[in-house]
Image 1 (spheres, rainbow, N blue to C red):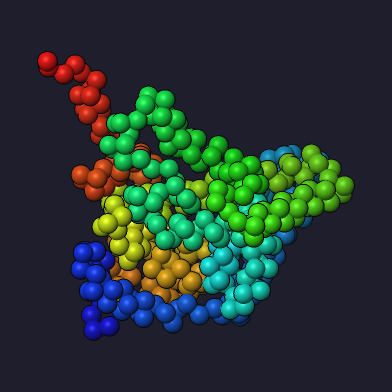
Image 2 (image 1 turned 180 degrees about the horizontal axis):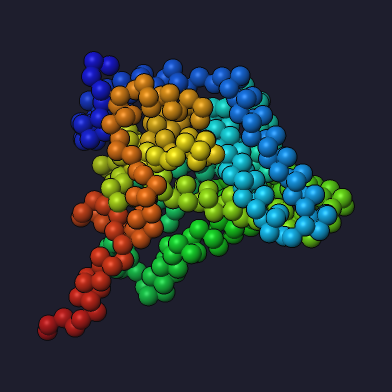
Length: 359
């Protein structure tokens, strides 16, 4: 490229010719990073699966030897961190990015999917839909977090408003919702799934059931649950937070379909979540989400290098860990102000709506 591309410099969707040229240039700039590296992939598997297995062995030992349960819970914390990292590998395999071999990606998807209670084919299908519609106000509802606009919220019934408020409450969204999602909802095929996805869900459920049976026969069901539940619950909660903060921040990108732009949805509607190095390692560089939404098949182990070497990616303003916490109180998309806002910002509108109108 003759000069770095910046997301805000990209043309409006009405200028389709220029938009396509700019996207083509951007894709060309990042294409070389979308090359799987078997050596890096195998190293990641070894530095993640082996510690995860080791922590499980230690947790089993503490339970069987009658250690205080808090010792097991302490070990469950890093185990959950490694499980989050395993989910990132699962995520990469769904994009065909982790290995160059389709068969190897599918095998990893089933193994990692069994550990994370997530079906490979079914999640792959909904996640691809998410990529094709992220930030599109007219295509919400698949693979995303429930988000209403200010106008939709004001027009909703009191019951729907109450349900929405409960859903968006952080105490519900990052505790109850992920547990229900990973342990219950994902045991069933998603709406619109085909035969391939249904068989995938059944296979994943069979893997989970087989592990439970083996663990129950060797450790006892109660001992297995004392280990598995805290690990999967903590990992699911962290995963929900990561997915939330990737697209739910004040100056995110949402547009109606006729104005929606795929490149802008990546560079402006997907955060660059700048985390401390140790946390970035555990979450497999997924904080570089703006790059991922520009070119989804870049493996996690190449994302940082892509960011460091492509100037266009460095133009995206980072979202720091401290700043990201403010997004907890952003619940509605304001189409007028083009930003996410909290419920407090519409109190005046609600009062005006409730007050009697002059005859």
